Length: 212
Image (cartoon, rainbow, N blue to C red; front, side):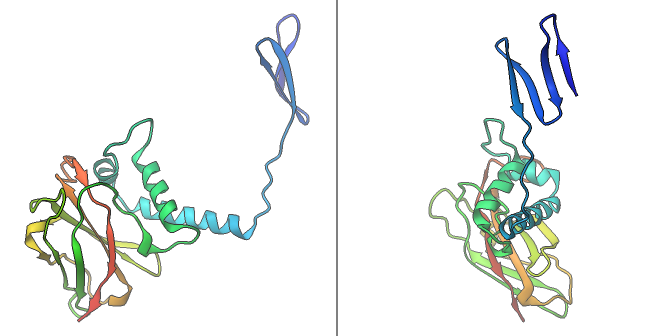
């Protein structure tokens, strides 16, 4: 509905197929545009990708985003927005859990990651090279997030579980899963996620677990 203001009748709002506004005292009239939504295959694929990344984000806690994704943000950027942006760039056009970015930062990551999963009792062993070559420290905390490749469902987390100096650790995991379907996303933090003391974080690295 359009409204008329003042003696001279300046109009603001919508009426019929037109939109009225006033700019620097001048009456502006524009034809009302109707968004074009052809439901193309590319549009549908992009919406599905966006929904999958949002679903992945929903599995994370507020503390996780605030601690891991809030580092160095400025100019009105938000942790969730940064998470969405990095993952949309990484994925490209289609969903691929192996390309998921669950942390992003400048801290040196761990190298030569390898994981084994016992299908009978669910025991998981993850090993890595503890060497530091740039800005890493042996006291940096190792964190992991596990996902299932086929249904995009985050099953369980192990946050602040150990330190780089340990070189190997055994996060708790449920039994009865298919090892080739389990993907581990490993990253490092300087400081604690739970205590919101993270000052640096590494880019997450992704690899599958092997069955034993």
